[in-house]
Length: 332
Image (spheres, helix red, strand yellow):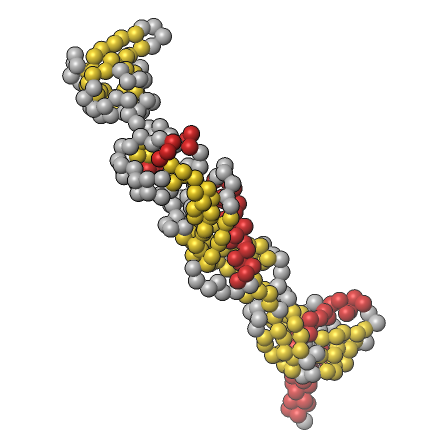
């Protein structure tokens, strides 16, 4: 008899533990939950309020039930199926007794995560806006048109729902573009969080009236007015080019230039006024004194350039700045 009573007592204790919630859940009377067949969410976490309709005379209870976290959401554009048994177990873990609630609706719920997409055309428009901004910053002359063409197909960007921001940067890191081809780096964020990075090659066509050669120009040819003319050309991302004759006439070519070529800044230079081997006057001066000596130019130089000169008296080589066709100055 004693063992029988002890067995009954132990069995009753196990029964109490089995039906009791380990988190000391509080009954939630006067609430009913209708489970939806399908639901679409925008956040990263699925809440009970996202997938069910909740009714109760207690507004605070409704708010509490809606905020119960079920699980993490699937990725953007994906879905997952939740069983009502799993949902009830998640409620128990968060202090709610599901058996005290009136349940109805579907036992399986398909939950889709809302997605938004940036189309290829939208991404192209971001690239065009970036290129036009860069052109306006780097050029004082207006252009006739700017065309931006992707070298390959642009794939759409699949993103979670939220406020989208796109940052575009050049991936050249200061290097010049080749044939107008520029890699652009896209950084795409949603609600301030970076979601995707990608680099796309674009061909930049910028039409502008610039100076081109009207005939073949030999090396070291001093450019005259009739040697160049204005023409509408695709200059790509180049900025160091000439569109005013006054900026180019009087300079000389560093190399031979074929007819019809665009003239860039690195193709010309000011002609030297002192040639290698010329005898020059070396001037060393300060506010207190002035010294002159005869020297011999070791290299040619234009006005303002620094060249190597040999002091004919000491036979030492020094560097000096060209002042005019006869004189150089040594910094003191």
